[in-house]
Amino acid sequence: MYRIGIDLGGTNIVAGVVDDDYKIISAAKRKTNCPRSAEEIIADMAAAAKEAAEKAGLSMSGIESVGVGSPGAIDPINGVVCFSNNLEFYDVPMAEMLYKHLNKKIYIENDANSAAYGEYIAGAGKGAENFVAITLGTGVGGGIIIDGKIYSGSNYAGAEIGHTVICMGGEGCTCGRQGCFEAYASATALIRQTKQAMIRYPESKMWDMCGGDIRNVSGKTAFDAMRAGDGAGIKVARKYTEYLAIGISNCINIFQPDVICIGGGISKEGDTIVEPVREYVKGENFARNIKKQTEIKVAALGNDAGIIGAAFLDCK
Image (cartoon, rainbow, N blue to C red; front, side, top):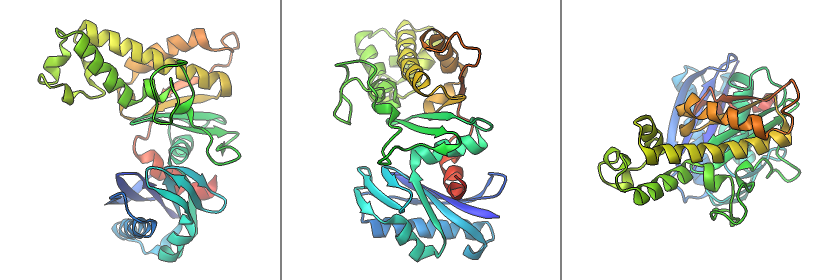
């Protein structure tokens, strides 16, 4: 049996055919090209799905169902994108519109929830009952699985882990609040922190690593500098890891999941990030004296998580 998962982002649309072993056997991509109408974007989603099926040697009749992970507040019961600021969608009946192109049962869910579900069924959360996935990218995304079910709140806008405050009156966040987890632990925040340190420490090796141009700073710069023994890089990496650990400690204290995983480009640092986070959490976890403890892992599926999770939304 084959399913199609579509990962709809602000930049790209990626559709993949997924088999019963959670393997992506073919994929096709389109540019989202925002801002565009919902009709145009959904037509490209359908085209990508058909191309992926064709690459797999299948017709759409050989596809069981199609799932979509979309940014924004999603009503999965009625198949509606209630609001997505990235796509400029308001009350878009996506499932109904996509069905007209593909004539297949359509399931939709928030993109972070879809990625979390992918990790839950086939990645870092496999075998867990309660699971939290945190994605560190432009922002901080979150997906929560409780008793094997995606949790999205009474209005489908829950699990916004990135918009919990870790520093009252702190850095401004795109959501309008101050001190959000996202404003300190996203890749965007890490890049800002790195640039600030470079300005403060003009002798830092990070300048050489960026070719003398601060615009070349990435999420890797501070960690690369830390490994090179650069004092400024060490300070940035340690402080960033502490911010991340505070947010993760909060998630653990609220949900006490079996597993919490960290995804996104920064998670490629692996144990460089995960080990100090684990150590910090030991002292912050309310349940630290209980034998069963949350396992903190790096996400296993990378960018495939959203496609795999979306493909199996019919099973959630």
